[in-house]
Image 1 (cartoon, rainbow, N blue to C red):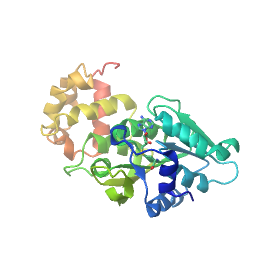
Image 2 (tube, helix red, strand yellow):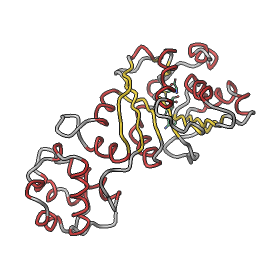
Image 3 (cartoon, rainbow, N blue to C red):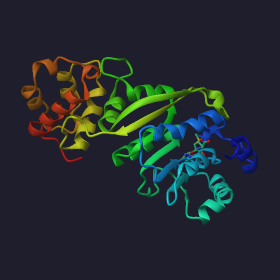
Image 4 (cartoon, rainbow, N blue to C red):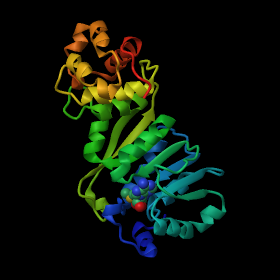
Length: 282
Ligand SMILES: C[S@@+](CC[C@H](N)C(=O)[O-])C[C@H]1O[C@@H](n2cnc3c(N)ncnc32)[C@H](O)[C@@H]1O
């Protein structure tokens, strides 16, 4: 395996925290990351890495592959993308690796089967919600506090819109927390690795876009009852007839607060809102 410090030296760069550049330099962490996909027998025939940096993780991903498998890495920084193309020239020539230079929020993503990435934290939420609808196994690194909100259960202070929308697409679990010293330069806060296994929710949501917008709206008033939150947030949820939803919903639900509502309860309420609340198109 390539030595992470050697890669940084060859690239001749220092990670720039203002550009979300914190390179993994702890070999033990780098060695463990692929095992989180292997443990669940994920399909690793086309691995996607967002934010390749100097390639320490890219190298591990290439080592996971069998004959014919492929790795695609997306890197926004022009110098780092150039370095990756030079460092991994043999793998690119052999057809095992593609380097896409560009912003992971904008480039066309390939038909990947799983992703393992140490995400740029400034855009980790946007990238995650680009990947989740693809319903693939994901092992992603986040700021620890963000990871804890993703996996939070109803009734806890961390539970919120992020928990419901994440758990709508996947079963998330924190598989490891990582100290700052594992990175160069060290980030300001601790990190956590989250494994996300795609799931079909045990509830039905006919209109996914409305569901996510409705959840977002209700959590803007997390200290209010659902009754008042439905009434006060029609400008966000887009409900033309919020009062009809209040009239049709169960009193038990209306008395709750958003942070006590399980995803299933949100889904049932969203379905009712679609049926009677006249949600507008966008
Ligand atoms: C936290 S570093 C991880 C680097 C490397 N994978 C590692 O673990 O050492 C994140 C990388 O994402 C890149 N990056 C930042 N914003 C990006 C974006 N919007 N799209 C693609 N890459 C981005 C940074 O240049 C940096 O190399």
